[in-house]
Length: 625
Ligand code: XCC
Ligand code: SF4
Image 1 (cartoon, rainbow, N blue to C red):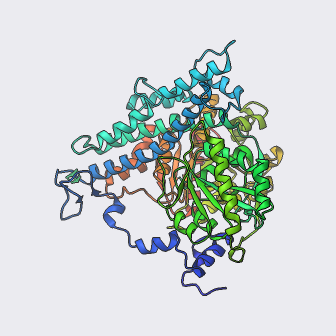
Image 2: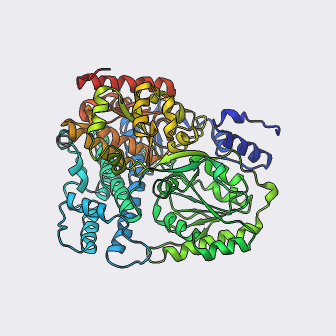
């Protein structure tokens, strides 16, 4: 093993990551971990959220010596405004992704594309009916046109509530009405947050944060939920299937293409293109035995859930995937794509291709995708990848580890199917304590932690306590690599959960999709609450994002809490400079919406906190511990 200055084992729990970190070090390639060291120590003002840059009388920093900004804003106002804008970034990300799904669906409905079709018309009709659109005897495309218009209304400012507020249990909805936080339209709530946080506008921290709840609810119950439902309608509703995960899914003798980003609109077309016989023949002509497609981050989750495409890694594995030297091309849409991928790619033969005009990277090649040219562009990109195969230096290729099997595809529909069409068996299992509760562990990686240590250990701790875990986003890869996404993992669960898993032949950790698919968790929670005639906040549920980093993760956490789900975070957002904001997040929200945040970096202690909350909720429902 090469001499290394860093303690590489302390950086990631995974063998594939450690091997690639060693290789990166040998080859002089910088990664996120190196840059984190260069950035340390972090600025304390920024870290606690008391640096204000929203006007040019400043920038102002709050300290004992200067407790007010030039305009007179105090730490509470500055922290709340900064956090409000942080949440707005997250809501905008998911929801603009949702809008792109509507535009694709709209193009299909109006016949403006041949490249996309309606794959699950049964689901489309069901949702149209749910939203009050007439379906009897109507042409499918007529229904699709009405549904696309209805979804666009959830983004605008003409409605008093977004369409899927209908799904929210009544008690919760009443709380929102009393607080004035029923989400109206995605764009409206985001714009209003930007307005409120302009200098001299909303100067009352709790008031700003209440709007934060409303805006995040618009993301969860509209932007993200629409993204999920329409992706299912366009590309198929996920069903249980198996796949594989870790860097071992890359193939030494094949053209390797990675899809990275979030939206399935581009990656689904790449999947089609890699199956094109002419392109496969071309790959063989160039000396490869075939074309291999694998996913990263959330677009990887989308393809894995619906098509079983293997997953190469999560957020912190994206640079390391290129370090294998085996990747011909990485094609991205948007979000969570480190700009460093361009530089790392240039150290090998790896080409980076961008596809969205709103997410370009200097040094990458831009191949613009639109609804009408998706497949054609996808084929062009796959051809580029094949052309790069002869440029690969096989001596520099190192593919660590062999892939781990996993099971994916647990949409709400799939779960209902498994249960024989009704939630009753699940409710009975919860009542009997065979499933003591359920926790959605979601979100990211962050190099401030040992990579996936918390994601993995929190998951393990909870299933031991007979708590069913649901994963989405980058936690999926952690659970998958840890062998927790297969039915055999039931042996790691408590004896009661183990029995349930064995009876249903399911893993104790269910993969429900990408980050926008956290909307599936909301929907499942709402269905359970409605079935029991209680509020979501009465259920023995929790959410957690142990290693989060992104604005989107904070937005998800906020809509989970506002929906009544107790939410754990490994570390706080940049809000610690305001006691008012911290108190509201950790306590005050509980009285307002029936749930709050808790912060705990240690996954074992976090499991304890979550367990305690679940026990409380069980007792309140009159159920045994
Ligand atoms: Fe991004 Fe969604 Fe986080 Fe992963 S989990 S690092 S947000 S890819 Ni969404
Ligand atoms: Fe400073 Fe107030 Fe301007 Fe912020 S808004 S930079 S606190 S003067």
